[in-house]
Length: 595
Image 1 (cartoon, helix red, strand yellow):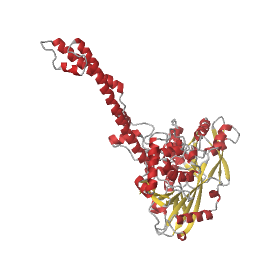
Image 2 (tube, helix red, strand yellow):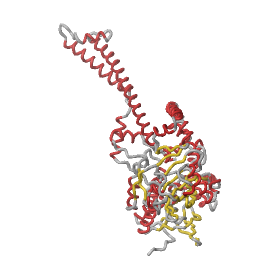
Image 3 (cartoon, rainbow, N blue to C red):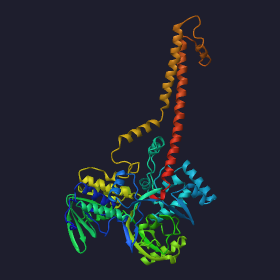
Image 4 (tube, one colour):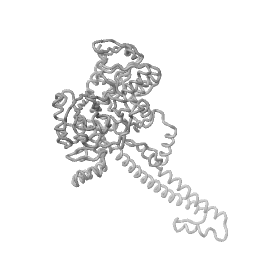
Protein backbone atom coordinates (compact mmCIF):
# COMPACT_ATOMS: atom_id res chain seq x y z
CA UNK A 1 0.00 0.00 0.00
CA UNK A 2 1.40 3.40 -1.00
CA UNK A 3 1.87 5.81 1.88
CA UNK A 4 0.54 9.36 1.39
CA UNK A 5 3.37 11.88 0.96
CA UNK A 6 4.10 13.83 4.12
CA UNK A 7 3.86 17.61 4.37
CA UNK A 8 7.08 17.70 6.39
CA UNK A 9 10.52 16.27 5.70
CA UNK A 10 14.07 16.76 6.98
CA UNK A 11 15.21 17.62 3.46
CA UNK A 12 13.23 19.09 0.57
CA UNK A 13 14.55 18.73 -2.97
CA UNK A 14 13.15 20.85 -5.80
CA UNK A 15 13.20 18.98 -9.11
CA UNK A 16 13.13 15.27 -9.94
CA UNK A 17 15.77 15.47 -12.65
CA UNK A 18 19.03 13.46 -12.55
CA UNK A 19 20.59 15.82 -9.96
CA UNK A 20 17.59 15.87 -7.61
CA UNK A 21 17.07 12.12 -7.77
CA UNK A 22 20.77 11.46 -7.18
CA UNK A 23 20.59 13.67 -4.07
CA UNK A 24 17.48 11.89 -2.78
CA UNK A 25 18.98 8.46 -3.43
CA UNK A 26 22.15 9.37 -1.55
CA UNK A 27 20.09 10.60 1.42
CA UNK A 28 17.91 7.49 1.71
CA UNK A 29 21.07 5.39 1.68
CA UNK A 30 21.96 7.16 4.93
CA UNK A 31 18.46 6.64 6.39
CA UNK A 32 17.37 10.25 5.74
CA UNK A 33 13.89 10.49 4.18
CA UNK A 34 13.63 13.46 1.77
CA UNK A 35 10.68 14.72 -0.21
CA UNK A 36 11.28 15.61 -3.87
CA UNK A 37 8.95 18.22 -5.39
CA UNK A 38 8.44 17.86 -9.15
CA UNK A 39 6.13 20.14 -11.13
CA UNK A 40 5.81 17.64 -14.00
CA UNK A 41 4.03 14.31 -14.10
CA UNK A 42 7.18 12.20 -14.55
CA UNK A 43 10.78 12.07 -13.40
CA UNK A 44 13.90 12.94 -15.36
CA UNK A 45 13.55 16.62 -16.24
CA UNK A 46 14.93 17.19 -19.73
CA UNK A 47 16.33 13.63 -19.55
CA UNK A 48 12.84 12.12 -19.20
CA UNK A 49 11.12 9.80 -21.66
CA UNK A 50 7.81 10.87 -23.16
CA UNK A 51 5.31 8.36 -24.56
CA UNK A 52 2.80 8.91 -27.37
CA UNK A 53 0.62 6.01 -28.57
CA UNK A 54 3.24 3.54 -27.43
CA UNK A 55 6.12 5.40 -29.11
CA UNK A 56 8.80 6.37 -26.61
CA UNK A 57 11.13 9.27 -27.23
CA UNK A 58 14.01 10.95 -25.48
CA UNK A 59 14.04 14.74 -25.04
CA UNK A 60 17.40 15.74 -26.49
CA UNK A 61 19.09 12.36 -26.76
CA UNK A 62 20.79 11.29 -23.51
CA UNK A 63 23.65 8.82 -23.60
CA UNK A 64 24.79 7.27 -20.34
CA UNK A 65 28.54 7.73 -20.33
CA UNK A 66 30.90 8.68 -17.54
CA UNK A 67 34.48 8.37 -16.39
CA UNK A 68 33.31 8.45 -12.79
CA UNK A 69 33.26 4.84 -11.62
CA UNK A 70 30.92 5.68 -8.72
CA UNK A 71 28.28 7.18 -11.04
CA UNK A 72 28.56 4.24 -13.46
CA UNK A 73 28.16 1.79 -10.59
CA UNK A 74 25.14 3.76 -9.36
CA UNK A 75 23.46 3.51 -12.77
CA UNK A 76 24.15 -0.21 -13.01
CA UNK A 77 22.94 -0.85 -9.45
CA UNK A 78 19.71 1.12 -9.74
CA UNK A 79 18.86 -0.28 -13.20
CA UNK A 80 20.18 -3.83 -12.94
CA UNK A 81 18.24 -5.02 -16.01
CA UNK A 82 17.63 -3.38 -19.35
CA UNK A 83 20.76 -1.19 -19.31
CA UNK A 84 22.01 -1.97 -22.81
CA UNK A 85 25.20 -1.08 -24.68
CA UNK A 86 24.66 0.76 -27.98
CA UNK A 87 27.18 0.91 -30.78
CA UNK A 88 27.25 4.51 -31.92
CA UNK A 89 26.46 5.54 -35.49
CA UNK A 90 26.06 9.23 -36.31
CA UNK A 91 26.79 11.61 -39.17
CA UNK A 92 26.76 15.27 -40.11
CA UNK A 93 24.75 16.68 -42.98
CA UNK A 94 26.67 19.56 -44.55
CA UNK A 95 26.11 21.29 -47.89
CA UNK A 96 24.26 18.38 -49.45
CA UNK A 97 26.73 15.76 -48.18
CA UNK A 98 26.81 13.34 -45.27
CA UNK A 99 30.11 13.26 -43.40
CA UNK A 100 31.32 10.60 -41.02
CA UNK A 101 30.95 11.58 -37.39
CA UNK A 102 32.84 11.55 -35.06
CA UNK A 103 35.05 13.43 -37.40
CA UNK A 104 37.32 11.46 -39.67
CA UNK A 105 39.42 14.27 -41.03
CA UNK A 106 40.42 12.37 -44.18
CA UNK A 107 36.76 11.62 -44.93
CA UNK A 108 35.77 15.22 -44.24
CA UNK A 109 38.44 16.65 -46.52
CA UNK A 110 37.71 14.28 -49.40
CA UNK A 111 33.96 14.92 -49.17
CA UNK A 112 34.48 18.68 -49.31
CA UNK A 113 36.41 18.62 -52.56
CA UNK A 114 40.08 19.18 -53.41
CA UNK A 115 40.04 22.99 -53.63
CA UNK A 116 38.06 23.57 -50.45
CA UNK A 117 40.13 20.95 -48.62
CA UNK A 118 43.34 22.75 -49.60
CA UNK A 119 42.04 26.06 -48.28
CA UNK A 120 40.93 24.38 -45.05
CA UNK A 121 44.35 22.74 -44.64
CA UNK A 122 46.19 26.02 -45.26
CA UNK A 123 43.92 27.79 -42.80
CA UNK A 124 44.59 25.10 -40.21
CA UNK A 125 48.37 25.39 -40.66
CA UNK A 126 48.15 29.15 -40.30
CA UNK A 127 46.20 28.77 -37.05
CA UNK A 128 48.95 26.52 -35.68
CA UNK A 129 51.70 28.95 -36.67
CA UNK A 130 49.92 32.18 -35.77
CA UNK A 131 47.07 31.42 -33.34
CA UNK A 132 45.06 34.03 -31.53
CA UNK A 133 47.31 34.98 -28.59
CA UNK A 134 44.30 35.19 -26.26
CA UNK A 135 41.18 33.05 -26.46
CA UNK A 136 38.38 35.26 -25.19
CA UNK A 137 35.55 34.02 -27.44
CA UNK A 138 34.30 30.68 -28.67
CA UNK A 139 35.17 31.81 -32.20
CA UNK A 140 38.83 32.28 -31.26
CA UNK A 141 38.91 29.01 -29.31
CA UNK A 142 37.59 26.99 -32.26
CA UNK A 143 39.68 28.84 -34.86
CA UNK A 144 42.88 28.11 -32.96
CA UNK A 145 42.10 24.37 -33.13
CA UNK A 146 40.49 23.96 -36.53
CA UNK A 147 41.47 27.05 -38.52
CA UNK A 148 39.23 29.98 -39.38
CA UNK A 149 37.96 28.55 -42.67
CA UNK A 150 36.66 25.28 -41.23
CA UNK A 151 35.23 27.19 -38.28
CA UNK A 152 33.41 29.63 -40.57
CA UNK A 153 31.97 27.02 -42.89
CA UNK A 154 31.37 24.15 -40.53
CA UNK A 155 31.01 25.12 -36.88
CA UNK A 156 29.81 28.73 -36.86
CA UNK A 157 26.44 28.11 -38.61
CA UNK A 158 25.51 25.15 -36.40
CA UNK A 159 26.56 26.85 -33.17
CA UNK A 160 24.65 30.01 -34.08
CA UNK A 161 21.57 27.89 -34.84
CA UNK A 162 21.83 26.07 -31.52
CA UNK A 163 22.51 29.09 -29.29
CA UNK A 164 20.76 31.81 -31.24
CA UNK A 165 23.78 34.10 -31.25
CA UNK A 166 27.07 34.50 -33.17
CA UNK A 167 30.11 32.70 -31.77
CA UNK A 168 31.97 35.93 -31.03
CA UNK A 169 29.41 36.54 -28.25
CA UNK A 170 30.00 33.14 -26.60
CA UNK A 171 32.93 33.19 -24.14
CA UNK A 172 35.81 30.76 -24.60
CA UNK A 173 35.34 29.58 -20.99
CA UNK A 174 32.22 27.76 -22.15
CA UNK A 175 34.32 25.65 -24.54
CA UNK A 176 36.95 25.00 -21.88
CA UNK A 177 34.29 23.71 -19.50
CA UNK A 178 32.48 21.56 -22.03
CA UNK A 179 35.46 20.14 -23.89
CA UNK A 180 38.02 18.87 -21.42
CA UNK A 181 39.82 16.67 -23.88
CA UNK A 182 42.90 14.65 -23.02
CA UNK A 183 45.19 16.44 -20.62
CA UNK A 184 48.91 16.33 -21.38
CA UNK A 185 49.46 14.35 -18.18
CA UNK A 186 46.84 11.77 -19.19
CA UNK A 187 48.29 11.50 -22.70
CA UNK A 188 51.81 10.92 -21.37
CA UNK A 189 50.49 8.41 -18.85
CA UNK A 190 48.87 6.51 -21.70
CA UNK A 191 52.04 6.65 -23.79
CA UNK A 192 54.21 5.33 -20.94
CA UNK A 193 51.90 2.98 -19.05
CA UNK A 194 48.89 2.37 -21.31
CA UNK A 195 46.41 3.23 -18.54
CA UNK A 196 44.35 6.02 -20.06
CA UNK A 197 40.57 5.54 -20.25
CA UNK A 198 38.54 6.62 -23.25
CA UNK A 199 37.56 10.27 -23.06
CA UNK A 200 34.69 10.61 -25.45
CA UNK A 201 31.44 9.14 -26.63
CA UNK A 202 33.00 8.03 -29.91
CA UNK A 203 32.41 4.29 -30.05
CA UNK A 204 29.60 3.19 -27.75
CA UNK A 205 27.50 4.17 -24.77
CA UNK A 206 24.96 2.73 -22.34
CA UNK A 207 21.25 3.38 -22.67
CA UNK A 208 18.14 2.16 -20.83
CA UNK A 209 16.25 -0.21 -23.10
CA UNK A 210 13.02 1.83 -22.89
CA UNK A 211 14.62 5.26 -22.78
CA UNK A 212 16.18 7.34 -19.98
CA UNK A 213 12.85 7.52 -18.15
CA UNK A 214 13.31 3.86 -17.30
CA UNK A 215 16.36 4.83 -15.21
CA UNK A 216 14.58 7.64 -13.37
CA UNK A 217 11.54 5.50 -12.65
CA UNK A 218 13.90 2.97 -11.07
CA UNK A 219 15.44 5.76 -8.97
CA UNK A 220 11.98 6.79 -7.76
CA UNK A 221 11.21 3.19 -6.77
CA UNK A 222 14.47 2.86 -4.82
CA UNK A 223 13.84 6.15 -3.05
CA UNK A 224 10.28 5.14 -2.11
CA UNK A 225 11.41 1.70 -0.90
CA UNK A 226 13.71 3.38 1.64
CA UNK A 227 11.23 5.94 2.94
CA UNK A 228 11.66 8.90 0.59
CA UNK A 229 8.91 10.48 -1.51
CA UNK A 230 8.69 12.02 -4.97
CA UNK A 231 5.65 14.28 -5.32
CA UNK A 232 4.67 14.85 -8.95
CA UNK A 233 2.46 17.66 -10.26
CA UNK A 234 3.63 19.77 -7.30
CA UNK A 235 4.65 23.28 -8.23
CA UNK A 236 6.82 25.44 -5.97
CA UNK A 237 5.20 28.85 -5.65
CA UNK A 238 7.50 30.64 -3.21
CA UNK A 239 10.18 30.41 -0.52
CA UNK A 240 9.93 31.88 2.95
CA UNK A 241 13.11 32.78 4.78
CA UNK A 242 14.27 34.53 7.93
CA UNK A 243 17.78 35.61 8.94
CA UNK A 244 19.30 34.02 5.83
CA UNK A 245 17.68 30.67 6.47
CA UNK A 246 14.93 29.04 4.38
CA UNK A 247 11.98 28.31 6.66
CA UNK A 248 9.29 27.08 4.29
CA UNK A 249 8.39 26.18 0.71
CA UNK A 250 4.98 27.22 -0.59
CA UNK A 251 3.54 24.55 -2.90
CA UNK A 252 0.54 23.98 -5.13
CA UNK A 253 -0.63 20.43 -5.78
CA UNK A 254 -3.74 20.38 -7.93
CA UNK A 255 -6.14 22.86 -6.32
CA UNK A 256 -4.46 22.56 -2.93
CA UNK A 257 -1.98 25.19 -1.73
CA UNK A 258 0.14 24.47 1.32
CA UNK A 259 3.51 25.23 2.89
CA UNK A 260 6.17 22.70 3.83
CA UNK A 261 8.64 23.60 6.60
CA UNK A 262 12.33 23.31 5.70
CA UNK A 263 15.39 22.08 7.56
CA UNK A 264 17.52 21.70 4.43
CA UNK A 265 16.63 22.74 0.88
CA UNK A 266 18.33 21.46 -2.28
CA UNK A 267 17.16 23.20 -5.45
CA UNK A 268 17.66 22.42 -9.13
CA UNK A 269 15.29 25.11 -10.43
CA UNK A 270 16.73 27.84 -12.71
CA UNK A 271 18.62 30.48 -10.75
CA UNK A 272 16.52 33.39 -12.05
CA UNK A 273 13.35 31.71 -10.79
CA UNK A 274 14.96 30.86 -7.46
CA UNK A 275 16.05 34.46 -6.89
CA UNK A 276 12.56 35.70 -7.82
CA UNK A 277 11.01 33.38 -5.21
CA UNK A 278 13.42 34.63 -2.55
CA UNK A 279 12.59 38.24 -3.36
CA UNK A 280 8.91 38.28 -2.40
CA UNK A 281 9.73 40.69 0.46
CA UNK A 282 12.17 42.74 -1.64
CA UNK A 283 15.15 41.55 0.39
CA UNK A 284 17.35 40.53 -2.54
CA UNK A 285 19.94 43.22 -3.40
CA UNK A 286 19.35 45.02 -6.69
CA UNK A 287 22.67 43.77 -8.09
CA UNK A 288 21.72 40.16 -7.44
CA UNK A 289 18.29 40.57 -9.04
CA UNK A 290 19.84 42.25 -12.06
CA UNK A 291 22.37 39.44 -12.43
CA UNK A 292 19.65 36.79 -12.13
CA UNK A 293 17.39 38.50 -14.66
CA UNK A 294 20.25 38.50 -17.18
CA UNK A 295 20.60 34.71 -17.01
CA UNK A 296 18.88 33.31 -20.07
CA UNK A 297 18.03 29.84 -21.37
CA UNK A 298 17.57 28.31 -24.79
CA UNK A 299 14.40 26.34 -25.35
CA UNK A 300 14.02 23.06 -27.23
CA UNK A 301 11.12 21.96 -29.41
CA UNK A 302 10.99 18.28 -30.30
CA UNK A 303 8.78 17.44 -33.27
CA UNK A 304 8.17 13.69 -33.36
CA UNK A 305 7.39 12.25 -36.80
CA UNK A 306 6.03 8.70 -37.03
CA UNK A 307 6.65 7.17 -40.45
CA UNK A 308 5.15 4.18 -42.17
CA UNK A 309 8.55 2.69 -42.97
CA UNK A 310 10.55 0.06 -41.12
CA UNK A 311 13.99 1.65 -41.64
CA UNK A 312 15.30 5.01 -42.87
CA UNK A 313 18.98 5.33 -41.94
CA UNK A 314 21.34 3.51 -39.52
CA UNK A 315 22.30 6.52 -37.39
CA UNK A 316 21.07 7.16 -33.86
CA UNK A 317 21.21 10.87 -34.74
CA UNK A 318 22.31 13.21 -37.53
CA UNK A 319 23.57 16.77 -37.03
CA UNK A 320 22.22 19.24 -39.58
CA UNK A 321 24.75 21.99 -40.32
CA UNK A 322 24.23 25.05 -42.44
CA UNK A 323 21.65 27.84 -42.35
CA UNK A 324 19.35 26.31 -44.97
CA UNK A 325 17.52 24.17 -42.41
CA UNK A 326 15.93 25.15 -39.12
CA UNK A 327 16.30 21.66 -37.64
CA UNK A 328 19.50 21.19 -35.67
CA UNK A 329 19.56 17.45 -35.03
CA UNK A 330 17.46 14.42 -36.00
CA UNK A 331 17.04 11.51 -33.59
CA UNK A 332 16.14 8.04 -34.84
CA UNK A 333 14.73 6.48 -31.68
CA UNK A 334 14.46 2.98 -33.11
CA UNK A 335 18.23 2.93 -33.53
CA UNK A 336 18.78 3.87 -29.88
CA UNK A 337 16.75 0.85 -28.84
CA UNK A 338 14.18 -1.22 -30.77
CA UNK A 339 11.96 -1.13 -27.66
CA UNK A 340 11.37 2.60 -28.24
CA UNK A 341 9.02 1.78 -31.13
CA UNK A 342 5.97 -0.48 -30.61
CA UNK A 343 5.63 -1.46 -34.28
CA UNK A 344 8.79 -2.88 -35.94
CA UNK A 345 7.42 -1.88 -39.35
CA UNK A 346 7.40 1.81 -38.45
CA UNK A 347 9.98 4.41 -37.47
CA UNK A 348 9.83 7.44 -35.18
CA UNK A 349 12.10 10.44 -35.60
CA UNK A 350 12.70 13.41 -33.33
CA UNK A 351 13.35 16.67 -35.16
CA UNK A 352 15.05 19.08 -32.72
CA UNK A 353 14.50 22.84 -33.02
CA UNK A 354 16.13 25.42 -30.75
CA UNK A 355 14.32 28.61 -29.80
CA UNK A 356 14.01 31.57 -27.47
CA UNK A 357 10.81 32.36 -25.64
CA UNK A 358 8.60 34.50 -27.87
CA UNK A 359 10.55 34.04 -31.11
CA UNK A 360 9.02 32.84 -34.38
CA UNK A 361 9.64 29.13 -33.82
CA UNK A 362 8.31 29.10 -30.26
CA UNK A 363 5.18 30.95 -31.43
CA UNK A 364 4.30 28.45 -34.17
CA UNK A 365 1.43 26.03 -33.64
CA UNK A 366 2.05 22.31 -33.32
CA UNK A 367 0.51 21.78 -36.76
CA UNK A 368 2.81 24.35 -38.38
CA UNK A 369 5.88 22.90 -36.66
CA UNK A 370 4.94 19.41 -37.82
CA UNK A 371 4.58 20.65 -41.40
CA UNK A 372 8.00 22.34 -41.27
CA UNK A 373 9.62 19.19 -39.86
CA UNK A 374 8.08 16.90 -42.50
CA UNK A 375 9.10 19.29 -45.28
CA UNK A 376 12.70 19.57 -44.05
CA UNK A 377 12.96 15.78 -43.69
CA UNK A 378 11.94 15.43 -47.35
CA UNK A 379 14.37 18.16 -48.48
CA UNK A 380 17.18 16.30 -46.73
CA UNK A 381 16.29 13.24 -48.80
CA UNK A 382 15.73 11.05 -45.73
CA UNK A 383 12.03 10.29 -46.27
CA UNK A 384 8.98 11.33 -48.30
CA UNK A 385 6.37 13.62 -46.78
CA UNK A 386 3.60 11.14 -47.52
CA UNK A 387 5.35 8.56 -45.31
CA UNK A 388 4.61 10.66 -42.21
CA UNK A 389 1.46 9.22 -40.65
CA UNK A 390 1.41 10.97 -37.27
CA UNK A 391 3.14 13.75 -35.34
CA UNK A 392 3.60 14.90 -31.78
CA UNK A 393 5.25 18.06 -30.39
CA UNK A 394 7.05 18.55 -27.06
CA UNK A 395 8.09 22.02 -25.95
CA UNK A 396 10.89 22.15 -23.37
CA UNK A 397 11.63 25.59 -21.90
CA UNK A 398 14.89 26.26 -20.04
CA UNK A 399 16.59 23.37 -21.83
CA UNK A 400 20.07 24.86 -22.11
CA UNK A 401 21.66 27.58 -19.92
CA UNK A 402 23.06 30.26 -22.23
CA UNK A 403 26.60 31.56 -21.74
CA UNK A 404 27.11 35.19 -22.71
CA UNK A 405 29.96 37.59 -22.13
CA UNK A 406 30.35 38.39 -18.45
CA UNK A 407 28.17 35.51 -17.26
CA UNK A 408 30.85 34.30 -14.81
CA UNK A 409 30.81 37.61 -12.94
CA UNK A 410 27.03 37.59 -12.79
CA UNK A 411 27.04 33.97 -11.65
CA UNK A 412 29.49 34.81 -8.88
CA UNK A 413 27.24 37.64 -7.67
CA UNK A 414 24.32 35.19 -7.45
CA UNK A 415 26.43 32.43 -5.91
CA UNK A 416 27.86 34.70 -3.22
CA UNK A 417 24.34 35.78 -2.27
CA UNK A 418 22.99 32.22 -2.11
CA UNK A 419 25.97 31.06 -0.07
CA UNK A 420 24.67 33.30 2.69
CA UNK A 421 21.72 30.93 3.22
CA UNK A 422 22.95 28.30 5.64
CA UNK A 423 20.46 25.59 4.63
CA UNK A 424 20.21 26.12 0.85
CA UNK A 425 22.20 24.41 -1.92
CA UNK A 426 21.72 24.58 -5.69
CA UNK A 427 22.51 21.65 -7.97
CA UNK A 428 22.22 20.46 -11.55
CA UNK A 429 22.34 22.18 -14.90
CA UNK A 430 19.78 24.90 -14.22
CA UNK A 431 20.45 25.16 -10.50
CA UNK A 432 24.04 26.16 -11.25
CA UNK A 433 23.49 27.65 -14.73
CA UNK A 434 26.13 25.36 -16.16
CA UNK A 435 25.85 23.25 -19.28
CA UNK A 436 26.84 20.13 -17.35
CA UNK A 437 26.73 16.58 -18.60
CA UNK A 438 24.28 14.25 -16.89
CA UNK A 439 26.95 12.61 -14.72
CA UNK A 440 28.25 16.00 -13.59
CA UNK A 441 24.73 17.05 -12.59
CA UNK A 442 24.24 13.84 -10.62
CA UNK A 443 27.58 14.37 -8.90
CA UNK A 444 26.45 17.78 -7.66
CA UNK A 445 23.32 16.15 -6.21
CA UNK A 446 25.31 13.43 -4.45
CA UNK A 447 27.75 15.92 -2.95
CA UNK A 448 24.91 18.21 -1.83
CA UNK A 449 23.33 15.27 0.00
CA UNK A 450 26.64 14.56 1.72
CA UNK A 451 26.85 18.20 2.75
CA UNK A 452 23.47 17.84 4.45
CA UNK A 453 25.00 14.93 6.37
CA UNK A 454 27.95 17.04 7.55
CA UNK A 455 30.47 17.10 4.70
CA UNK A 456 31.84 20.29 3.18
CA UNK A 457 32.05 19.74 -0.59
CA UNK A 458 32.38 22.62 -3.03
CA UNK A 459 29.67 21.88 -5.60
CA UNK A 460 31.07 24.46 -7.99
CA UNK A 461 34.30 22.45 -8.28
CA UNK A 462 32.48 19.64 -10.11
CA UNK A 463 33.61 19.64 -13.76
CA UNK A 464 36.42 22.12 -12.98
CA UNK A 465 39.12 19.47 -12.82
CA UNK A 466 41.55 19.16 -15.72
CA UNK A 467 40.41 15.59 -16.32
CA UNK A 468 36.80 14.71 -16.97
CA UNK A 469 35.56 13.35 -13.63
CA UNK A 470 38.31 10.76 -13.72
CA UNK A 471 38.76 10.68 -9.97
CA UNK A 472 36.71 11.45 -6.91
CA UNK A 473 37.84 14.17 -4.53
CA UNK A 474 40.55 11.92 -3.14
CA UNK A 475 43.43 11.05 -5.44
CA UNK A 476 44.82 7.55 -5.21
CA UNK A 477 48.48 7.18 -4.07
CA UNK A 478 49.17 5.09 -7.17
CA UNK A 479 47.98 7.86 -9.48
CA UNK A 480 50.02 10.42 -7.53
CA UNK A 481 53.14 8.23 -7.87
CA UNK A 482 52.51 7.83 -11.60
CA UNK A 483 52.23 11.58 -12.07
CA UNK A 484 55.45 12.12 -10.11
CA UNK A 485 57.25 9.63 -12.35
CA UNK A 486 55.96 11.36 -15.47
CA UNK A 487 56.89 14.80 -14.19
CA UNK A 488 60.37 13.60 -13.33
CA UNK A 489 60.80 11.86 -16.70
CA UNK A 490 59.80 14.91 -18.73
CA UNK A 491 61.15 17.67 -16.49
CA UNK A 492 63.39 20.11 -18.31
CA UNK A 493 67.14 19.90 -17.71
CA UNK A 494 68.87 22.95 -16.28
CA UNK A 495 71.43 23.78 -18.99
CA UNK A 496 73.74 25.80 -16.76
CA UNK A 497 73.60 23.28 -13.92
CA UNK A 498 74.44 20.35 -16.22
CA UNK A 499 77.18 22.41 -17.89
CA UNK A 500 78.75 23.35 -14.56
CA UNK A 501 78.54 19.75 -13.32
CA UNK A 502 80.15 18.23 -16.43
CA UNK A 503 82.69 21.06 -16.64
CA UNK A 504 83.71 20.58 -13.02
CA UNK A 505 84.03 16.80 -13.37
CA UNK A 506 86.04 16.96 -16.62
CA UNK A 507 88.24 19.81 -15.32
CA UNK A 508 89.02 17.94 -12.09
CA UNK A 509 89.76 14.77 -14.08
CA UNK A 510 92.45 16.52 -16.13
CA UNK A 511 93.73 18.41 -13.04
CA UNK A 512 94.13 15.26 -10.90
CA UNK A 513 95.61 13.22 -13.77
CA UNK A 514 98.21 15.89 -14.44
CA UNK A 515 99.15 16.31 -10.76
CA UNK A 516 99.40 12.54 -10.31
CA UNK A 517 101.94 12.30 -13.14
CA UNK A 518 103.89 15.25 -11.75
CA UNK A 519 104.03 13.66 -8.28
CA UNK A 520 104.90 10.27 -9.77
CA UNK A 521 107.87 11.84 -11.58
CA UNK A 522 110.47 9.86 -13.64
CA UNK A 523 112.79 10.49 -16.56
CA UNK A 524 109.85 11.06 -18.93
CA UNK A 525 106.81 12.59 -17.27
CA UNK A 526 103.40 11.93 -18.88
CA UNK A 527 104.24 11.53 -22.56
CA UNK A 528 100.62 10.69 -23.42
CA UNK A 529 99.01 13.60 -21.54
CA UNK A 530 101.52 15.89 -23.20
CA UNK A 531 99.46 15.43 -26.38
CA UNK A 532 96.80 17.63 -24.77
CA UNK A 533 98.99 20.63 -25.55
CA UNK A 534 97.72 20.32 -29.15
CA UNK A 535 94.22 21.13 -27.87
CA UNK A 536 94.90 23.04 -24.62
CA UNK A 537 97.03 26.05 -25.50
CA UNK A 538 99.93 26.46 -23.02
CA UNK A 539 99.45 23.03 -21.42
CA UNK A 540 102.40 21.10 -19.98
CA UNK A 541 102.55 18.18 -17.55
CA UNK A 542 103.29 20.42 -14.58
CA UNK A 543 101.59 22.05 -11.65
CA UNK A 544 100.87 25.11 -13.79
CA UNK A 545 99.67 22.84 -16.58
CA UNK A 546 97.26 21.15 -14.15
CA UNK A 547 95.45 24.46 -13.61
CA UNK A 548 95.43 25.15 -17.37
CA UNK A 549 94.01 21.65 -17.96
CA UNK A 550 91.31 22.30 -15.33
CA UNK A 551 90.31 25.53 -17.12
CA UNK A 552 90.07 23.90 -20.56
CA UNK A 553 88.41 20.78 -19.19
CA UNK A 554 85.82 22.89 -17.38
CA UNK A 555 85.19 25.00 -20.51
CA UNK A 556 84.66 22.08 -22.90
CA UNK A 557 82.70 20.09 -20.33
CA UNK A 558 80.42 23.07 -19.67
CA UNK A 559 79.79 23.61 -23.40
CA UNK A 560 79.05 19.93 -23.98
CA UNK A 561 76.68 19.75 -20.98
CA UNK A 562 74.87 22.97 -21.92
CA UNK A 563 74.29 21.90 -25.53
CA UNK A 564 73.30 18.37 -24.50
CA UNK A 565 70.64 19.74 -22.11
CA UNK A 566 69.48 22.23 -24.76
CA UNK A 567 69.03 19.54 -27.42
CA UNK A 568 67.38 17.17 -24.94
CA UNK A 569 64.91 19.84 -23.82
CA UNK A 570 64.19 20.75 -27.44
CA UNK A 571 63.48 17.14 -28.43
CA UNK A 572 61.29 16.59 -25.34
CA UNK A 573 59.39 19.82 -26.08
CA UNK A 574 58.78 18.69 -29.68
CA UNK A 575 57.63 15.30 -28.45
CA UNK A 576 55.28 16.84 -25.89
CA UNK A 577 53.90 19.17 -28.58
CA UNK A 578 53.21 16.17 -30.82
CA UNK A 579 51.59 14.23 -27.96
CA UNK A 580 49.46 17.22 -26.99
CA UNK A 581 48.30 17.81 -30.56
CA UNK A 582 47.47 14.14 -31.01
CA UNK A 583 45.53 14.13 -27.73
CA UNK A 584 43.70 17.31 -28.69
CA UNK A 585 42.86 15.96 -32.15
CA UNK A 586 41.42 12.76 -30.68
CA UNK A 587 39.42 14.60 -28.05
CA UNK A 588 37.95 16.98 -30.64
CA UNK A 589 36.75 14.25 -32.97
CA UNK A 590 33.35 14.39 -31.26
CA UNK A 591 33.48 18.17 -30.86
CA UNK A 592 29.90 18.82 -31.98
CA UNK A 593 28.55 16.53 -29.23
CA UNK A 594 29.76 19.04 -26.67
CA UNK A 595 28.40 22.15 -28.39
